Image (cartoon, rainbow, N blue to C red; front, side, top):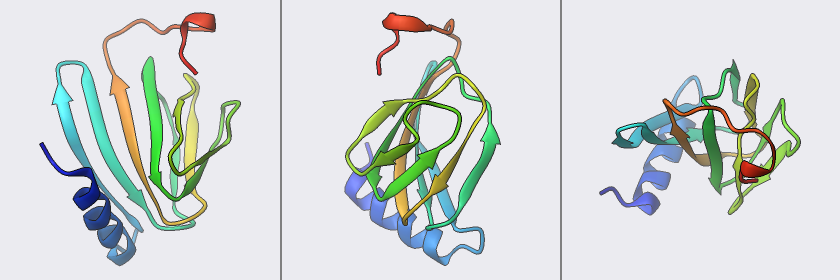
Length: 115
């Protein structure tokens, strides 16, 4: 298993050096579970995209804005469920995110969905 502290440093450095301002790696791929580390340089946006039925975003460092959901700003140390609607992610600061998704499950809305 990879060390998150090392991965954060490695991918943030790679994103800052990359002309597109991003670096990513899938760190867990177990059946329907996926976890990806995503580093974004300040001002870089992941353009609008669909979300799987179950997904969360944890900001390991930095601050991001997510469109298309109630919580629009996610800060360092916070984890939030992602919207089931199309959304984009904008790095308000140099940021590293841990995105967790579960594919192949039915969408859950309402009180059953963790916030």
